[in-house]
Length: 423
Ligand SMILES: N[C@@H](CCC(=O)N[C@@H](CS)C(=O)NCC(=O)O)C(=O)O
Ligand SMILES: [Zn+2]
Image (cartoon, rainbow, N blue to C red; front, side, top):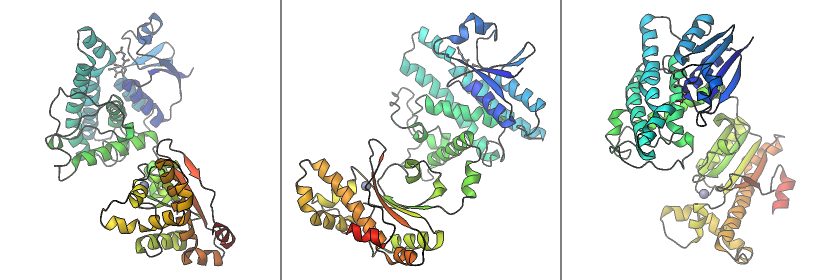
């Protein structure tokens, strides 16, 4: 009979076991409980785990294993390869200490049943959140220097251990439970901000050293470094081969010329790994034939990387486009944006016929992209590539910040004939 894991969405203790089972390559069936509805307190589940907690791992033969850490240790003994505990006793101690900070000193204080109890004792939502975040912060304050000391890509060393099995769910929970603690905000009574920032962007707690200073005042940007470590851990948890793949990536097929202010990273919009795209960004996604920076990128992309596609990508609601034509004076940027004013001038009849300001700017955005497509396609680097039979196609897209969707302007140029049609 196969294994069955009793687990729950968002529950971090079973998440530890899922990571362990995945690392060991052990197959299992899944039985989902809804902890908010109280499935764990139903008599059927109490018969499985008297503690009314998840996880429980039914391994058949009437044996049900409980307690996530003991399940991980059992897995390690039953399936030693790959190891999730180091060999040397002192190393094992360090890994277990990290795991126990999460499993004994953070998580039990923040468990669903503890929140329920606080609620029944009259503590309001803000108070419960303050309680939760306080224990997370104290735990991470202790964990971060340990990871900094022992970790080389993982919490301990360069392979996942039981410490990661505990740490990754805890980081997930810190971000998923509106963790918005900011360095420098000492008050424990502050109201939490709503979770409007996507989870991947939310901060995780950082070291006590950074806590006493604001981000602006922190010369070493420790909070960003801590975010980075958490990001790397999340990436590996979701996709263990991510960084190896990046490091070994072959030449990208695409050059992206986008706006500095386009908020969403290029590869994220088209759901590629970062290494799969060569990216150049500037204000207004321009391709000015005199700009040495853009030209170097273009030449390198065409001649050396041999990309197959160049994507000029603008975005609706672009601040650069608006600034180009609002008559304001901002300094050097006014010169940089000059080509956009030229496009505006060339198409003034069409633009003037558009009733609303927003619509006019959005159309200018499109016209600007088309113009930059023409700049790229008429560049000698691209034309020489075509002349020697190299395939390069230049595309014009605009994407919407509000929907995340790309609008292909249908102006792709893959040779001189296409270019002539664009004129
Ligand atoms: N020490 C236990 C903790 C288990 C635990 O508290 N599980 C939580 C989910 S993360 C649970 O089932 N809570 C249900 C409740 O509090 O009612 C372990 O590591 O397995
Ligand atoms: Zn922009």
